Structure formats: C-alpha cells, structure tokens
Length: 255
Ligand code: ZN
Ligand code: FE
Image (cartoon, rainbow, N blue to C red):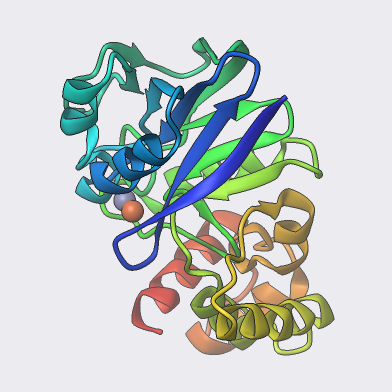
C-alpha cells in the first residue's frame, strides 16, 4: 500500500510524496524546490528517497532536483525530449517504469510543453501542468490541437482515476468554468465546495476524472452548452472539438 501526500511549495505548487510503508522508501513528483522534501526527510528518519519523477522542464517542477540528487541516491526519471537536470532515465511515450514496486505507464502529453509526460498507475494519474482540476495548462510550446489530443487521451482513463496535478488553481479555474457554463449544476456545486475549502486553506486535490468530465470545460468541448458559448462569443458556428478547445484556451488566457 502506497500513501500519497502533498508537500506544498512556492505559492501554489504541490510536490507529491509517495510512501511505501513496507520498505520505508519514498518518491516525489516534480520537486521544484528541494527544501520541503529535505525538511520532510529530516522529520521522518529512516525514510529513503529512492525516486524522483519529472513531468516537464519548467523550473517550478525541476528546481530542486539537483540538490535532492546530491543529498540522496534517488533515481531521476524525466521526459527524453526535454532538458531535465540530473536525469537518469529518459522516458518516452508508452514506456513503463517500476517505482516503489509499482508499474507506471508513461504518456506523452504535449501542449503545455512539447515533451511533457504524465505517469499513470492503476487509478492514479500524475499529470503535471497538463490537466488541472477544472482547467488545463497554458500552451507555452504546443498547439491547441496537441493539448486537445493530450487531454482526450487522459480523459479516456478510468473514471475513478485520481488526478494529481501540480498546482492549486482549482478555484480560479472554476470561476472560468462557471463563466463558460453558467447553467451547469455540477460546476456550480463544485465552485461552492471549493470556495469553502480554499477559505479554510484546504487542498482541493486530488480530483477524479469523473468530476473533471462533469465540470472541466476543457474536457467538455463536445457539449452543446460549451460549443454554444464559444459560438456566441466568437460569432462562429459548428466548430469542431479542437477549435472549440482553442477558443476556450484563448479566452481563459485573458480571463
Ligand atoms: Zn509548467
Ligand atoms: Fe508548473
């Protein structure tokens, strides 16, 4: 049994910590800062950091890697096509890796960056800055088509998959989601819940794919309500899903 918890970093990042209680080995995902991880290790004697998983090259995801690598014997996994500090294992689409005795599948999910990858193990998805709770990452390197394809792929995983993304953006994402779908009761309910959670400084993650499909406008580009809203704003008609996605992403960039 592996326990997953969040080590907060910077203003809104979560470094996911995976603990294997049988072996007292642990792994982290996207340690943008070494300090929270080293503080945790110092507070938990006997635990060994054995693996570091990296989704993409942005500093808030890799900034702590070298310091952790120097302080531990951890193995660093990251995308083959990006420049990842101290990377030991270069990963590409459909690779499989063993971490803490669990097999993770690697998915290429270009869009936020071109080499962005996600890690999936039966019901658990670590997706970096690709799929967010109620939103998705900005398109720094990829095209809307690429991101739409990547999100569609993630959305095809089992509905009960837990979504561990990197940022606490859920509340601001939901404010956009309700602007897109003012009559979506699931979005309204989630906005109310998340507003209360954030007022109490409670983490809103992980999400589930089932909830994302009900409330995340970027996974709902086939829905009439979303298409009509985009048409109304842009004066378009009958756009395909990828074009609806592009319009939504452009709107969100300025929202
Ligand atoms: Zn990023
Ligand atoms: Fe990020």
